[in-house]
Length: 207
Length: 207
Image (cartoon, rainbow over all chains, first blue to last red; front, side, top):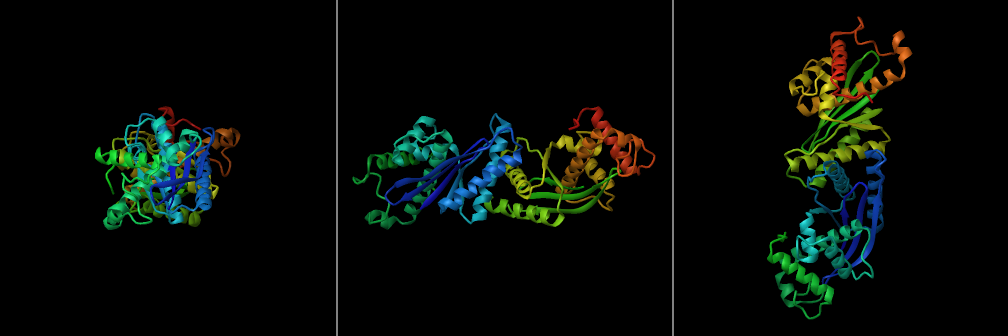
């Protein structure tokens, strides 16, 4: 299943696409950052970002999309721009007929590292391991978009795991292995542990 | 000059188009409210609103658009949805190649009534008079979108007034009459007075 994660932003908008496979494996398909200059008018900036989102959808053909949920913060002007970008991301998905979900920053952190309070560095390190990348994805917006995609893949995976208890018990081909399965790579084991931890701490409620 | 004003909202989005003519006259071209159900997913809701915005642009062919500037308020969840709609309005304008500006609620109130603190009723009454409508536009979102269009028309009008002092002095055909001109209708006079008041109180800085 191909997942496009979006870290919304007007100056930098992270767009990360991963291929989530059976057995808790995931690989990088594409990652890029759409940028627009603060010197341009808001409508022109949104157009640049929207065109790049459409381009990524066209090129990577995701089955599902995810975008970080925006909350009001101290920097009101910035958060309004971020919410506007989230709006055009949701619209782009709807126009392309692709389902899209929103995840909070703490849900994303918990899904990837096991802790909803994990720092940027921890998230980046886990994204690197899960996707078996030689280097940490840069800039931070790129890493965040991949973390959002991983979060979506995992939550989707959890949902189907819950829906098919028998297949999971048997551990047949194409199913997600148990968290303690001996056939997990170190990165898969970390991801599985993160999943268990976040579930135990209630940071991410299964859908 | 045809102006489309948008009062952004996810449940109700006001879309009012006016024809602003010389001599501080303005008439109603079209007013409608795009609606989406809170029971639908955010992406589907934005799609419904976006399609209606595109339809209005296609049907009324505005020369310029204006949208109310969204600020963070107490109701964070609602304001995020409103900001998302503002984002798709800005995007729709950019895609159609139509210039768009943002005005704060107090700028809109001041432009229409002379006071940035005017109540809903005052704004609605002035919109009714300026556009010579038999009834007050309903619902409130419809009246607000027309007020935003009037604000845009007036601010645009002020800018060109400032740019062409000679034509204004001579009061030739096609120019905006002076605020104290004897040839103003009562509604035009009220509008002109509102303009003077708001300028005196500094509620709306000329562009």
